[in-house]
Length: 335
Image (cartoon, rainbow, N blue to C red; front, side, top):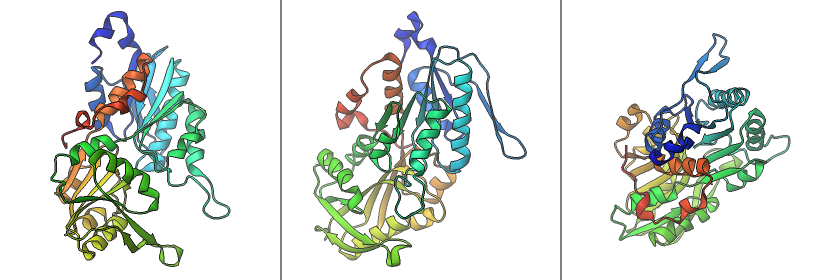
């Protein structure tokens, strides 16, 4: 809370705004900071153009706008860009884009010829639109930070999720990296939870389609696997991984991922006997309909993490200290 700062006017210069992508998370952050959400009117013209109007003075204020670029990705991204431009033209002191989920992150490199590097393009667009700083959570690949010429704070929900997992019986658990690209993530969970790591090898038939599991390195017989990843979108790959583990003799698994994009047939695919529980955070809004469709789905809040970081940036304090806390301080109750 900012009660002590209000006396010298510091609190008055912090303004928190929300786009339309995830107003619930923005409200949680505002409540923890002890501030009200700013007045930002966003609408679409009949031809789908986005119109933004800031309905209060923001001159010389420290602006933080919460807007994940989740589906519909292009619509939410454009809304963020237009909002950033509006704040700059309204003479804001600084503008920080709080993007819990960074869309286009999978397009971080050229895998074949004549392809864009869209993650870099989005970084350039955010900077050009007026962002002075960007905050994001669990990027698909950490090197996206290097696409920015402005400060970029890459946060992680790892301790939030690990804290929740510690409330479970993990006596027979193993951490599972679903592919070689998630080994480092699994290692970080292993350090927090003191669990062994299992690695899955996959390949795509003919270079396309859903990856198939071709090997499991490590013992899963009679174990409870915890598959860790950065996001769940359609759920097909995760379900295949869970079923492969069951075929290898494991118990039903936990799935832990920061971003619950959950599109297409995800809810149906995740309602499998091989999956005990699906754990995500609210970087992406999860509707009541999705929660009802999948009773094993748990959504953890990262509002404490983001509000702490926003407060530190506003005060000029160290952000790195956030990651030096014990895991037990990061436990959040599912919403």
